[in-house]
Every structure is written in C-alpha cells, then in structure tokens.
Image (cartoon, rainbow, N blue to C red; front, side, top):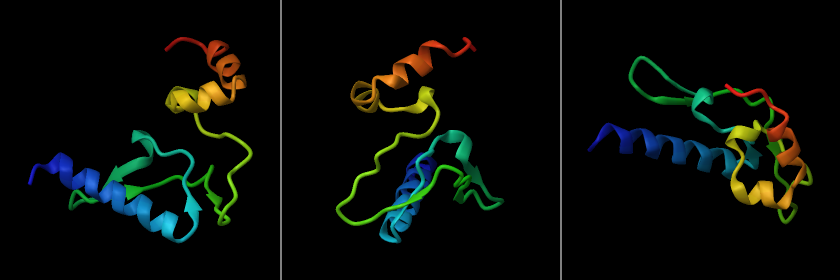
Length: 89
C-alpha cells in the first residue's frame, strides 16, 4: 500500500478515536501532525481542543484563519475581517 494512504488512514483513525471519546481537536493541520521513528502519525497540540456533548454544537470558532473551511467563513463573517487584517507571508 502507498505510504500516503497509510498515513491518511492513521489520521482518520486517530480523529475517529478522539471523537469516539468526545474530544474535538479544533486545530488539525499539517503542523500538528508528527511522525515517530517508525513513520506513525502522532496528533499533537490540543490547545484548542474541546469536549463534545451529544446533540450540542460549539458556539465559537477557533483555529488559524488560513486553515478554516470556506463554509465556516461564510457562516462566521468575522473570520473574513481576521483574514484580511493578517500580514502577507
């Protein structure tokens, strides 16, 4: 199997594990994925993580605007202000 699919499967299984345990990472991006010496994915940095409660959506958005999904930006227009005020890279 191609290594990219192995890594993708590890990410999906990791997120599934956290969601099964009612934990939401809220800042999943390449910088928060590490590889160990055996090329296993480690999901790190839970600074924005939160606990899910069945049937309840989060009322706040978090994360870095550059990684926010477009549908979130369209729902929360204040993200557009944040993005437009950032310095170009």
